[in-house]
Image (cartoon, rainbow, N blue to C red):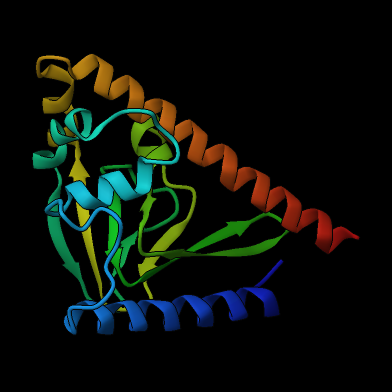
Amino acid sequence: MGSSPRQQIVHNAATTALKEERNLRSEGGITPKFQHFRQPMSLLMQIFHDLSDKTEDFWFKIAPFFKREVIPAGTVLWNQGDESKELYLLESGILRAVYDLEHGVLIETIVAGTVCGELPFLSETKRSAKVSAEQDCVAWKLDREGWKKIQEMDGGDAVAAELLRLGLKLTTERMETITSYIQRLIG
């Protein structure tokens, strides 16, 4: 399993879309649905609005625990087998996950407006892939200290439970996509 022609097409389309969105934003053009929220709140709403029935009041509680991080192209966020110390909400740019598997390599492109690293972070397991910045990125990081503070705050149990539930939903979606891709490869 390696990088497929379809993956290259998707990657090129995502790169073009990101450049166009960046240009539109800088020109005061069309902006995302949740533009009236400050970051990372708008990103939280964008990523989770289709997966959760929780309102902005619910997500507002955890927004302060995410820290903005600029990630230069080529930066390795983590390697396969590393401890899971953070998860990211990707505001702009592209990340690349490389899964070194027994029967080959699987490459996943992670685009802006998505979350990265949530399952190993929430489950406190080792990283299953090497993740690096393919382009310069802006991301919002939740680390272990922030996660602990979320759990300790008033209502933190409900927020933590919702994040765990959403992490499982996102993982299920990814597994279905990967399984479908593998089935097409096998024939």
